[in-house]
Image (cartoon, rainbow, N blue to C red):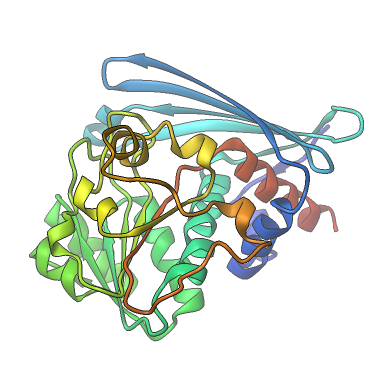
Length: 300
């Protein structure tokens, strides 16, 4: 019977730097085959993502997104993950959905920030107060342990609670908090832009995590127009609102690079005063890279 990997199994073995390296290594392999299916019922969604990478195997990750769950004290996002062997296609492992999502999503943004953030990072703003916001604090602290953290949320009580748990400060004014931060990381369910380009100053890095549908936006067009814009994958990012909308309108002339450009040095900050934006669009190919790494750690 294939093993099941959960948070208790993985926590003693994994590190953010190792998972970032797994993403770098994975992007040096043959390009992934990926496919997504999105079904909608009002605000609810069923998203299935699959990937196959020669040398790593294949993976299917299915997520349900039910925004109304928050009012019942239940997770908004749930799902399942299956990892299959590269040589035989047999089931190698199942993985806890939330555990894998945490490591993959946060390492995705952390890898980008490690290349795109300004030379000195003294203050980091987390926009959002859910599980991913907490994971981003943990991930960013692994690279910038001395940075100050501010948290802003549309739910001020939740921001205070997360700040108390994370040795951070709850921010009351979003515009001021954005202006003062060196890294701004958003993980929300926003359908209208929360971050305005007029609030940004030279040298900042903006990390957009939350939007996964064409109708979701966390940053306005001016954010994209004022910045050099990077994505984890051009193929997956083109379908989300923060990239697809400004590309269609012309507000965003082009995307600078994605993770396939890591090996050539094209995925990097070139000027300390430039504004960089990274869209974390995810994708099952990233889940596959991280799941294989975690599975290898557990079997070793």
